[in-house]
Amino acid sequence: MQTIIIVEDQPDIANNIKRKLDKYHVYIFNTIKSYEHKHADLYIVDIMLEKKSFSLIKQIRGRTSSPIVILTWYDDEKTIKKIEESWWDIHFDKLVNPNILIHRLEGILRICNRCKND
Image (cartoon, rainbow, N blue to C red; front, side, top):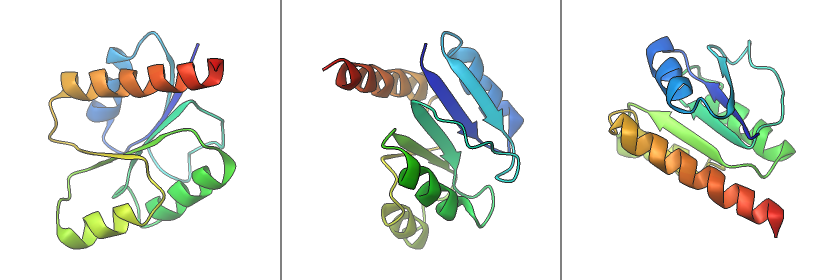
């Protein structure tokens, strides 16, 4: 079974994602400090959780090639530029329809699973 780690400070968002991805092992951390350095098949990180979000992304990328999905409310040019420079794989606005987000996350996991099996 594939594993997903969510680092998100808004429980309603994190729990909604976890509920909809109930066929996977999903771990939620509400702060960067509480994040345990576990391996996952997919990481979902709220970049504005704390100022250290970008360093967390770089730290994860330094340990694994698993996809990193960034969630954010921000859409200003400066933040988007910083996202683009931070070794992320996919960026979603938190305003995205939750069902579309889940379908896209499951698609990412299917691709990862195929790559492992090749």
